[in-house]
Image (cartoon, rainbow, N blue to C red; front, side, top):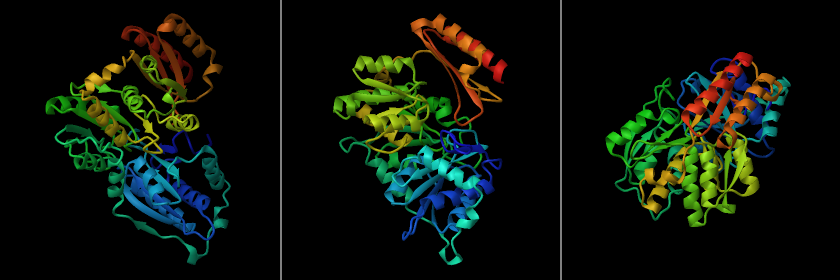
Length: 449
């Protein structure tokens, strides 16, 4: 990755480098220049989540884009996958999302989509960086009569809802099905309830009142506890928790049991295989996926490919191998026959379709996979040297791996978006994974914290 772009766009604390008005203005200018073509009136769509800083960043982007003779189209709060859809659907030249996804409120970020609805490849991001840091964009400015303009489109949400509803099988109806949605005070706060309502569901929404400051605050896919209680209280069939920008999903069954992305993939892959929709009999997961998923897929006779962490790496493997489903344990699941990127609402609708097809409650469907005990410890780090170059950490990992043998595994990796090292252990019992995970985390903290 370059200096600006991480594994998922540009990220940082709002109003601090790189998420400043000045840098955002330059990202807008460089992106506009990159997508400008002769004899064509270029358009870039801009959407955002519900963070209050979105206004500042949106205006800076618009200024940069228009200054390069490109038109900006604003759609307001919209899930990240919604912008991917609209960019392709409206034949825009690019799409930009202002969001830091599931990160805390003070963070913000920028993700860019190509005109085909896929996230920008690394080499295009690098071109944007090079343009910005070459400091010669002032030489690329068009004349005053060639400047771009900004406009808003009012029917963006309706277009996206129609697209979402079309991913739900027509032979099923949600008529009378009780569903609880946790919108994380984020970008799904209107789209998700309206989609389920239009499909006939009896919808209860929680955490759907964004005020600019409460996004992801003790709610959403990172904190499904309140949703679990609400599902049981309402005697609902299912609950769904989205993250701040709507590309992740965590499900809750009718008994209040929380299902991870791995469990959702196991359930949906089984149904897809039965329907003949599982292309190449393949599921793509990541190194962070639970061992239980591998065991379940093996029992179902489904092949598995393991990618690096990050939805862009999952997508790369899916496209190169012709897989129709792939994702991460965090709830970021991609259905390539429906969309170009992970979409929490599409994932929720596929879970509902699986329940309808199997005519079983979600707690029954969840039995397809046994989740192995897992412990994850995040450690703030001052630097990120290659793990293999820190002998003490390597020794700590080897010692634990020897103890676990074939009964579990260890994974130590850096976050792609934060100054953080993640230590994960999986094994036969909670006691063992807690002990082993802490053992390694203590060494990481001592050496890098």
